[in-house]
Amino acid sequence: MTTPPALLIAGHGTRDEGGAEALRTLVRMLGDRHPDVPVAGGFFGAPASPLPLDDAVDGLVARGATRLVVIPLLPAPTGPLPDALPSVLERAAERHPGLGYTCDAELGPHPKVLDVLERRLDEALAAGARRPEDRARTTVLLVGRGATDPYANAEVARAARLLWEGRGFAGVETAFVSQAAPDVPAGLDRCRALVAAASSGRPGRIVVLPYFFFPGGLLERLHLQAEGWAAAHPGTEVFGAEAIGPAAEVAEAVMERYRATVADAPLPGDAACGGRAAAEDARGTDGTALRTAAAADAGER
Image 1: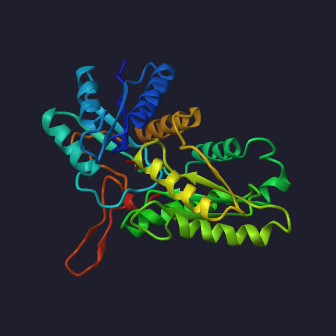
Image 2: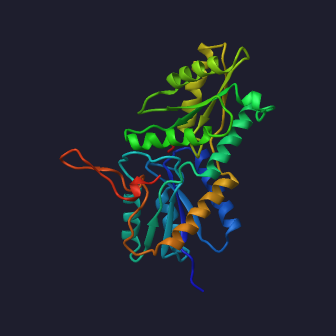
Image 3: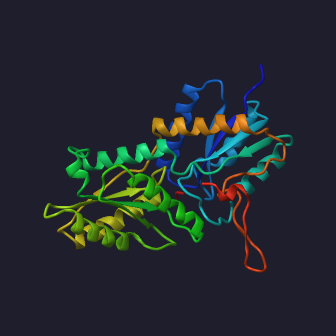
């Protein structure tokens, strides 16, 4: 029997132990459900992570893995990074001669991820969250990490549109914790205007929804920004939702992507990383963006 490629889940670097434990939980969940597939996970892009991606690769190789399918567990591309995913994987291949890998695109707004986001909204709103009249007076602020790359930020806007379609909310606006506009207070201002227009005399409300897979410093910063705005606007109800986390739907989406990658492509020893987080846009001397084909496809510190 041919040994299947190992599954390597790559999160965007966090120094937060809570984020690391969330990824460990997801890895355990996948291992329990799919014992035939070696699986590990770690973070790239941040020094001193409690769960480095290098260690995850080394552990899979120690278990006999010679081929890896790398799934970047990112809601959107990261933009340029000092230590991006391709660099981490290239170093791993140098440490382990003969190691092959294929890197897929970011998980992004997969339908199963959107289902979890909807559940996080309902959990934040508690009782009555799914009644049409309650949703009609609710505006959502979907908050991404923020990047200097406009393509990365556009992916958050795409997720917001997909979340809004058919779910009955008054609107889904976007904001970013850093590096991009609108920031969280400006996004809440826009939501407040929508709430006033849509509530028809009933009290409106805003749900601040993190577009992060894992808890960590960014989530804490987001909560502080939202709490500060809410304190300055006592007439508006503001609810804070939790991060996506290691939900069963996320595990299903990761395995779905893994299976599709294994079925569609061989794993040569010099495979290049396929996602936009892994193959960052390069810019030539004439200012023209040079993008890979995978970069046209559609974290957390």
